[in-house]
Figure 1 (cartoon, rainbow, N blue to C red):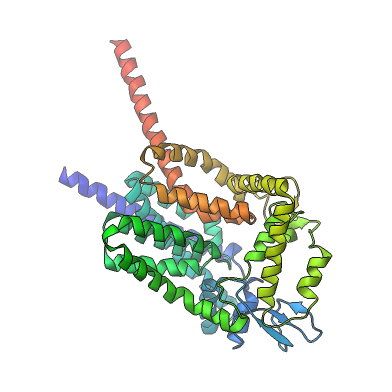
Figure 2 (cartoon, rainbow, N blue to C red):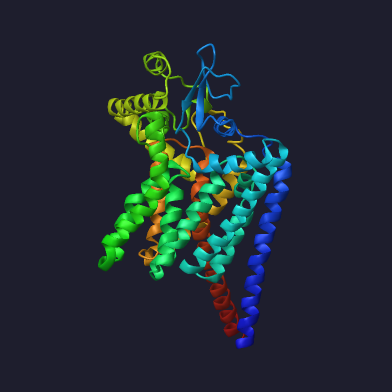
Length: 441
């Protein structure tokens, strides 16, 4: 029996190595077929301005007093920014500083993202192994390795892979803490949680749940752990907030929340950003004058964010039925990956690569979720991720790629559903076979 176990263990290890190798091969190959060839528009001004020693700048004002997100050689005004979360722009900055913005620099970014994608495969394997078992872990690793959009995302200048990696690392250390407390693991969890919150704004929504969990999970040392967790997270978050306080005039970590809320909740909203609707949905003239008609200064992003937020809330109060209908519609968009009811100009939105693999996986995911309810206490943190991710899209807006933020966890539950269906099929086949044997006798 010991020899058999050794063979099985060796085979499982070989399987994981093979999956990770193929995952890297797929991503590396795709880089040279569909990979980005330049810095994407939303990151280019940030990285280029930092490279030029101008700081974290998204908006500039040209000599004709026009606001732009283009990199200007001779700007009239540079507006300090917190419009994008800082982790990914600084990640890009390392490569641009060392290798420039040419093809070499871009390709090295994408190859690094391919390596991070492989790390994600390994992390999801370990998480699924802890929560479900070896067969589900192997299926989940394969799903992460070959899911088309995850392969594609590694080849693009996009924060998706960085966010998923940090989320998975945070998740992994959290699961280790669930099993057994270790100060080293706790400090790693706190560190990566802080980075996670600076990778995308929605990371902050998990903060109160982390505090509640620590408070309930460790009653004998809750005060010391809460303080330690807060201190470690603050070491990551406070420097960025203070930078924004001194540069923008307010302690914030992001200045795009108001815009995102308005795009998802204004009276003409359809559930996606207005610039992807054909014809584009413009803002009211009075609102445009309020934002752009009073000139530009270093507080522009704070002012803009506040105006967007105020108008979004007002539209929600004035049109509550529309807001409720939008909530349902955005939830449907998010979980179906199908967009309908308007003309959508998002590149590839109707491509099967977005919706076909997802719709094929969804029934297995739902079956896995139903099976998990019997042990809901074991899987509560996954449910929390699904709930928060859905709430974010329902409150703000949806894009086809946003579903990727729950791919790892959906893949794990789908793997569980597939494995249990397989076992049910094997069991049924045996019963049929035994019944046939009985009839023959």
